[in-house]
Length: 135
Image 1 (cartoon, rainbow, N blue to C red):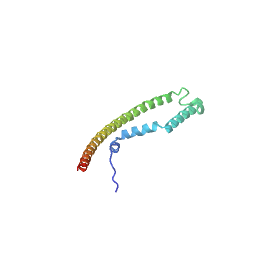
Image 2 (tube, helix red, strand yellow):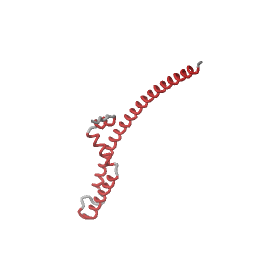
Image 3 (cartoon, rainbow, N blue to C red):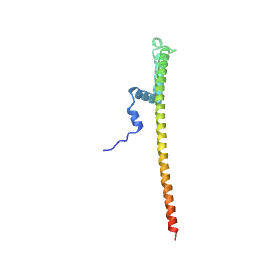
Image 4 (cartoon, rainbow, N blue to C red):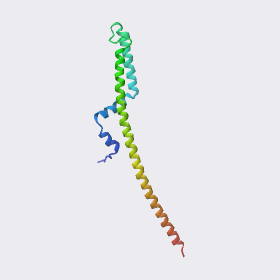
């Protein structure tokens, strides 16, 4: 059986709330080219349907006031979702920086220990050389 190592990132992901996971998913979706393409397509379709196909009976004629309202609401929601996701990303970066610092401190202590061992070995080698060179 393979033992899975549990690291900070895995524990963090397991502790996410549904809202945190939703914010991450939406952030990843809104920050993609497919989203931009679909969004532009929807805007073009809205304008075509209201200006060309429905001409005189459009539910949102030319200045597209209803579309403007929807876009304003979308921008407000996107801003909030992106702020939530950015706040979480800052917390992750801070925790990772702390982890890196702790790792560096442990590594420095281990390097110091190895340097001390190396110094001891050099002293022993020097003593052995002087003992060998004595008549």
